[in-house]
Image (tube, rainbow over all chains, first blue to last red; front, top):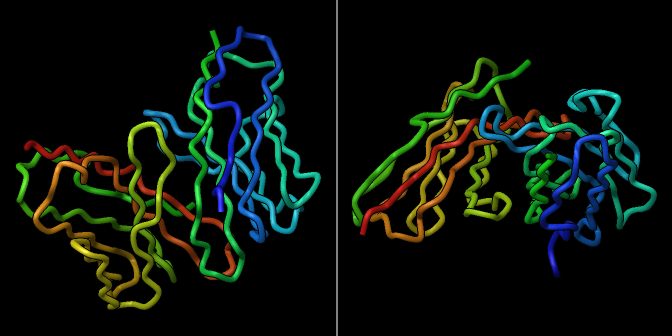
Length: 114
Length: 111
């Protein structure tokens, strides 16, 4: 298995631009998580899905952030408009609900908003 | 909400030394997990613990689920340079569907 695949690996954009991060979970996994990692705040859960349905989005910072999971093999995290304080590493992780939630993380997207 | 306090924040040790780190919570968890993050990569699961008092090993790594269910410990024996990275603890409640992560312990191993 290729593991969780995220794209792009690096994204540099200007303030105000729209940013879309992509994730392909491990085949057969039914839960998908978006995390953000910064030096100041560590690993923060933004949102997670079970069976493509958003379950908890309480970690989404504000309305500029949105996430979708149109099918079991694809999810996006969108920031519009982006701001410099959104600069962070964004991780996608997947798991099989009922397997004690062992998370399998992607390699992350390093986002820099100038 | 639940908070995990992970300590120490960082460690600088000599190759061959043993390492101990721990994680404490303000509330109980039913599952404790330990992850390692290498530079430029996502965290990778090392050990999962499911029962209070459980002691589990994975090679040179040993982790324990605290009896109070509010803490967990990770030990690394005979450290080697490739042990360098950030170690995270994470706690879960059953059926909660999400993990709460500690702030990580950054380990540096000097050859």
